[in-house]
Length: 415
Image (cartoon, rainbow, N blue to C red; front, side, top):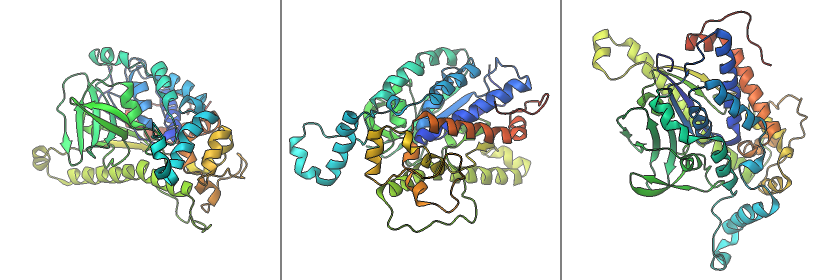
């Protein structure tokens, strides 16, 4: 029921930046329809996700029997997003979580004995749990796997106790779990708790407790210590892989950062999160390309004798800096959240939404790096979705060639 060769989809992490992935998926659905491809076939047999990409992956997998319907639902959610759907953004909620958490970091040693329950994170993400229950019907997954609409779904999280990077997967047929240095796979029945764990941005959202082979362990964002984002898809049988990132793979040459004084907490935090969410993907793609070149250089007899095999990969990532886009939308956040972020150095950009993004690493947009992961507001998510669609349609010929779809009629255009 899915396309051959076996195609994998890898969606990486990035908080609110994952709206870009939905724009890419929307453009893929459009190109697929325009090509006249059999719409009954699922284009992705293997779907793997991490962090916010895990949520998009699970939502898509739960509609593996109707790819267009799955994309349409994702589009509807992200197009109408508000921060309150992901974390408590009211004044009381922010005070109870964020303000108390920051206080604990500063003078918590003096107050800890008076607190019956210590805050666990900057923000309270219980609203996200309720949103997942409404929009990600994981109860459909076993039936879709049994009917072979999907081969496997994998969700990755990071264990705080073991320090290991764990990929939890559910598959149509029993598959051999893999174990590598500091990263392992566990076959299980996936739940919304796995999605909450995978998307628990460190310090920002609380960890989730998961059952790992009969033993409970606390897990956080799967992007932490992730050294091989593409690996789970290959282990689960993907022969070619589409990877959708949530940040630029490489900065353009000539970009100069302005020294605006000592970096704020927001700048440091944004830089750290970018290291967690973005760096591993670029390194893994380089590794995959190097292996492909090595395999191609081997004589045929040697290729047959090795377990290595070439894996075709198409990577679609933002053509613009999402930090700069976020800087233009900080004012759309609830006042309580803006106040909290302002306390650590986030400032709204003075740029108008139609103005060109600063080319010199303007301090205002650098301070917005942290906000770019938390800006679950429709003005920002729609901007990223539009960028994802435009980036994909700009590479129309590459996409069609990757899937083997036939171009028909005039070139597709964004609606």
